[in-house]
Length: 169
Image (cartoon, rainbow, N blue to C red; front, side, top):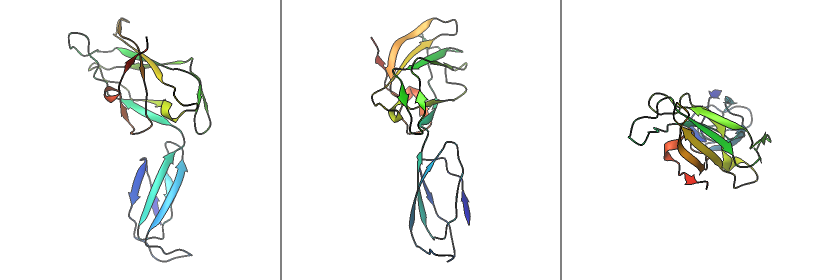
């Protein structure tokens, strides 16, 4: 028996086994649906098993940022405010309400801290939702005007500095 703790979209598990109950395969493909976070216990009788995992909850971790002011100084202790463009439904199914805002704090280096889990809008139905986002300095001055971003469900964590922002005007 092999206990497997997987938190990836795709994991390749190589586990030695011995013939047992009904199955003794050289290669097995296991497809699992799971909640995040979760520990999957697979009892493997195969010499090689490929485990493909799909997260049921489309939450992703947001990290990074490296936000700066117009002089190139880190946006120390600033924050972002995110709001979903319209209501959606996740795969579990959970209703995700658009009217609520999520405040995300930045540390002294302008990085998201602590990391935040948020719904990926690419995993919500109906499709084509996006996040409206504003960036503020520590004193509440708006640094980045209202913008649109799409937060994908892979990879996780998602570095906000790598996403494309567009004007919401």
